Length: 516
Image 1 (cartoon, rainbow, N blue to C red):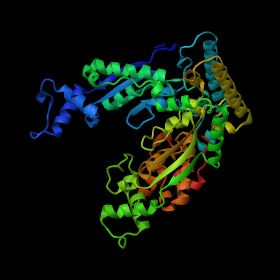
Image 2: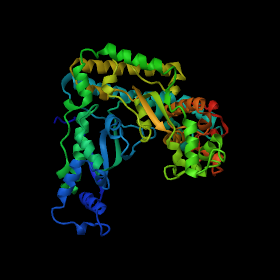
Image 3: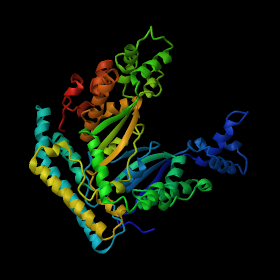
Image 4: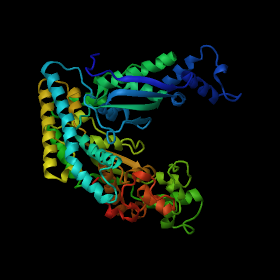
């Protein structure tokens, strides 16, 4: 395998079970034990063969018990978005581009040479310079808005100036390439690691995916070599269904077909960031029925409106005012699983990288390579629209990035490598669904004025549409401060010194406005 020209990904197994493979055997034996819990010392020689039989038969819950915590560094945002965070069964804590300034040179450089490499590096350097210049151009706009929100704070003070600078970086990062490195902790079960390895060569970043996942597997095999007994080789890229489809239809799915797709999708949004396209016909009635069933009461004792109030109004269901999300453990709150909603969304790569962290609101995210447009196709944050000169600089930056990508592709550079230059602003189009229990939690986090602006705007859009079709449900899709106010939980805002400056709990959803 060719090597990236940038520093190698650093993969380290930080924490693991002492004998993780044997948990498969002890868990499986315990299922059929008449003598109680089976422990490692109870296992007989040759017991490892049982794990192979369980694996082949698809009895994989026994493989889920053991978990591994990895630290990863020198991995791209593209890899994280396309692969590492594109499924629900993980936990990650990664460095934030919203709050940590990106250092020059911290990017993935694929195996290019000659003029292609020169062009790639020049474009990266241009994007890094544009990032710094955009942050500088945004500073007076952000400072003005910050003073409006906090009139008694002196913006020359170090901590307040730092807060303003971070707001500038949050928006300036839209010009950074998805090749930008991140570092993170990433924890997964053994079965998830096996799945990673089996499918690591799919789009969008098969080279980097194979490289990083291969290192993760090597780390685990050094810790417990027994996993080699159930480790399957990766499926070749050519055998993945997406690759096979586009190979078969290559001649008919050119630029014009891609343009038609984008135009159809964008028209279907009807001006929304996130459009409600489907929901269960009887959401509110089904929710009310479920509440009555949990409590074992007839309709005459609890009508639909009262039942929904009981489960969704924090004044009645005080668990909704807790910082700890307890809904999956609350018998009453689990009734919220039944209503569901489906949205058609168009977000930037930056915003969607945060949106996908809500792992229980799943989405059918695209093969980014196949949605790629030869024309600049990007999202512009509201803050940039405030000043014509700033927006013009932003648009010109995007045009130059797309021009560089086109030149790389014309030189025969693989799309996989050329796509690393795409900016965080590149538009991502997809469909996302969620049940009410998990959507309510997501909105509680993302309707907060401290949430990233673009995902906040999408969440406001969603909550307003739900109010139109399910008003009794929709009026309780609120940020934490409003939920805590209803639950009489103090303090009303849980953010302390990070208070956004707006008493949002006093506002109706129709009054929500923000710039930073």
